[in-house]
Structure formats: C-alpha cells, structure tokens
Length: 500
Image (cartoon, one colour):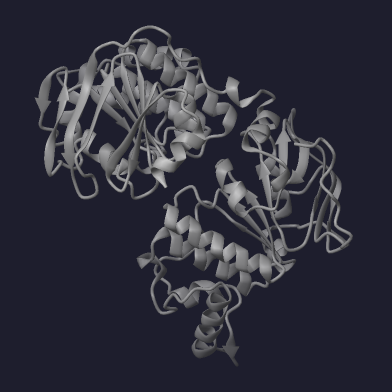
C-alpha cells in the first residue's frame, strides 16, 4: 500500500473529522484523528479492538462528544448532541444488534419516529405506500404487512436500512453488519448498499471480516492505538498490508509455526458420512495436528460440526474415535467420547452472557466438583484462576460478567471451559468470528498449543486465509463432498478453485 494519502476528490467531502480527540479517564481512545469521507462511497474503518473505531463512530452518532477537534457535515460544523440529533442531521448507525420491534410490521418499523398522520390519526395507507417505495429503492419486495419477528436476520437488516432511509439518512454507519449473516444474506445486504451508494448515499463500514472490504468498500482507513495509520483506495492495497498496518506486523507472523516432526496416529476418523448436505465425506484428524476443512456457506461444513457434536445423527457412515465406532446421539455423548465443539455463535451457543467469567469457565465440569449436592468452591476458584493465567484472559477479575469482555477473551474463556473437560478432539467452527486481527493471533497460538499438547484439532471455516495459515492438512468441501485433500502450506489461490 502506498504511504501517501488517498487521492482527494475535488468535490467537497460529505463528512470530515478534524483533529478529533477523546479520552476515558487516563485512556486516550482517539488521538488527533483527521479523516475525510467523500460522498457516494462505502468507506471502511478497521482496526483491532481498542484501536478507536467504535469511539469514532459513536461520536458521529451522537453517543458522546469529542474532547477536542470538530466535525463538518457537508461543509457545516456540527456536533451531534445525542443519537436523535444525529438522526435529524441525516446520520444513522446500524448496530450488529438490530433496533427493531419484532411484534410490529415491516411498515410500522420503517415508519417508527416519522409516522405519517392525517390530522391526529395514523395514516396507515400512506405508511405502507412509503414503506413499499423505500424498499423498492433498495431493490427489495418484502411484504410490508409481515411482522418483523417472522423475518430472517438478513431481511431484518434490510428493514433497518429502509428505516434509516425513512429518516432521510445521508450517512449510514454499519457496525459489524455481516457478523450474523449467511453468505446469501451478505450478498443481499451488499446489493442494498450498492444501490444506496448509487443514489449518492455514504456508508461507513466497520468489520473484522477483511475479505468483505474488497467486495463492497471503495476506501479503507486503518486505525491503531487511537490514531489514523493510513487511508487509501481499497484497490490500491491488499489484505496482508491492511493486517500489517493494523497490527504492526506482517501476516506471516499472525500464524504460529507448524510442527516439523512426523505425523502421529489418528484419533478421529469420519468414514463416508452422509447427511442432509454431506455426501460420503471422509477424513482423519491426527494427534498433534490441525485439520482444516474449508468450504463456502452451504458446502456442508456446518453439518460436519453438528454431527461431531452429536446434534444431528448422520444418515449413513460412521464416526470413530481411537478405533471405536461411536453413536453420537447428543452433545453429552460426544463429550463423553472426548470430543468438544466450540460454536461460531458464542453468544447463543457458548456463553452465559450475564454470568461471571469464572462461572462460564467452570460450568462445563460442575459435576466433577459436586459432592452430595455441594460445590467445592475452592477447587472451582483454583480452576478459574489457573485458566485465566494459562490463557492470558484479560479481565478485571473472575467475577466480571463475560458479556463485557472482548470477543477474543470470550473465546479464550470457552477454550478454557473445553480444556477443563480434558478432551482428545477439539472441533472449532469459525473460531475467530467477530474477533480482531491481534486477538486472532492469540487464538491461533492457543489452538496450536492444543495440538502441540497431543490433541487432534479440526477447524471448520470459510475463512481461506485462516485455514491456509493454520492447518497442517486441508480438506476442501464443495456441495457436500470432499473434493481435495491438500497439505499444509498450500497457497490460497491453489485452494480457492476447489471450493467455488
């Protein structure tokens, strides 16, 4: 990437941050940040957790004011006083957790706050007409009479954007908008953003999924330690260069070294397994090695995870651990066989968000410390303290509610819980989803440590960089079939033709 600034458009920018600074106590979250955002672009803002991107977006959205510096919107100095004021200025933030009312219809959600009225009565006909027109502008034909609670998450994202347009939004802030979306929903969302851009709208796109930047964004700004490191056209950079600027180190240093010794024996064998999507898939996971299974959404990687965790029995074929065929009828049966699974959806299928970090770590092995209905609290505290130290979990203490920890530390806590059960096989599905690049490196090192300690590790992911950088062996999955068995170190461009 060039170290010179991005080419400046002769047209006046729609938005400018000028020397913006913000501190929280002794922590300086933003340090003299200046940033130009041109009209009609999708502008990516990336950085590790703590880099300052969320603080910058919240200042723009009126959540809190800057300590110093200023903002200019269409050439006019502005200071959004609160989120409602920001919305009236044409700035709308769309969080990962959507702000929709499930029991209201699509039309009612789109009109919230700007409901058309005839005298004192709600004009429902005009409300529905406006909702249809707004959705048509986005290239969508959702029924405006459907309740939002009946829509899938991708459709809800569209309603959220339509709701922003109903407020005459000029600037959309999208905070991790694709974290919970399937691939087809991501494509649908990107189609909507392209139409928004074509109509002169501007979007600020915050995401940990760097591959997506090259699909939808025009410009990227990288933040590190509260400062702008670089702004450049997306076409003038690479993912590796963005990672280097985010972390201060090259991509090659993000992944731990592979072992050089001979392969150990197999622990897990999947033999000709078929299911709803899978068709005769076979693979072997060996002690001390990481097996990466890569495929696009719909390829069957999710079904492999469900089968191995005992959530979905295969229609045919068998699963063997240490030479013994297993009947994986439940997650409890899988755990008893020495297989532990870490879901990509930490919040819904892994964490107990309102419980303490310590309880989240210890809960998986509670039976081991319970006698006559009483919990050995001393043993639990010892387990938790050892886990926090061993995995370098950053936390104010074991009593911290886990929902307030970063994604990387939440994932470390789930690994700690898994380790406590002493499994032989670890199955990770999308192990670094929603985690910044710096924290990813720590998770990758932990996964490699698990393998080095003698476990068999299976990674299920559609992140090609992750699979190639971490795996000792790669299985490429396409439309439910294993189509290639490749060695570790195979380049991304050699794997890609097998999965598309």
